[in-house]
Length: 304
Ligand SMILES: [Zn+2]
Image (cartoon, rainbow, N blue to C red; front, side):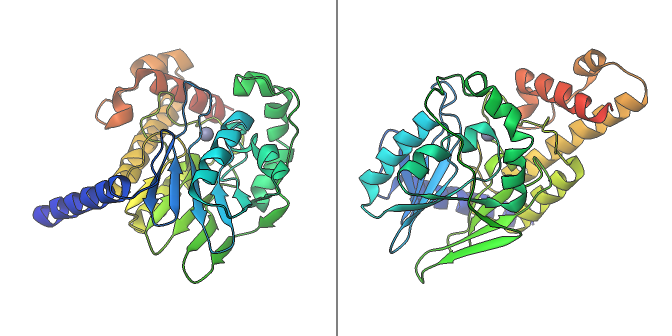
């Protein structure tokens, strides 16, 4: 059993290595992860934080997540290095600023913005607060940029399939937000999660969304791990695999149980920040900044 598991991990590492290193089309900002599928690495330091993926179809390009406007401009430049086909669709995995403020830049280049119905609704309701403080949220100058809402929405699933490429956009929320959607490439077994999963970035997960549903979130991570993806592109951080999805689930559910128990016992937020121990979890278990931020956010949501 153990041997089979180790073999599986090795096979996945080899496949990932192959997928990320042996294909042409690599630049400083992006690389090809499968035929016609490109990954743009979001840069927290440069304030272009959200990861992006684009898929080249026969007649058009589908982009997953829009970053901030300056990130979107850079992504468009990168896309143009890989194809001359038009960028026709941009999918927002969820409504958050770092995944949707760049919509206007893509719309100006004639792309249609897509999301789940719930994400489009959240963008207009809870997302308004982010837009009102847009320069604060993005850390950059949002002067001259406008809001661009999704104009093509779906309830549960939307499929792009031209016989060569197939991308399924699937609603998974309520979880990290109400409307979370993922992009799934069943042939290549590539999963693009938005912030349902983040991997090693300095801030960890945002667990404080007003529409967060923790138990839904854990179920979603279990479901996604059950699809057994070979490459999981997170909202932030390096691409990972199925094991990383499970690690994230266990980390978040352990935190949730400890915060929940602490609130029931009448403990204060700062007592919980001091007491909660998550050191046994890989990656985020040793990230003090992310743990403290998440415990405070979770306390604020659960202590109502
Ligand atoms: Zn994000």
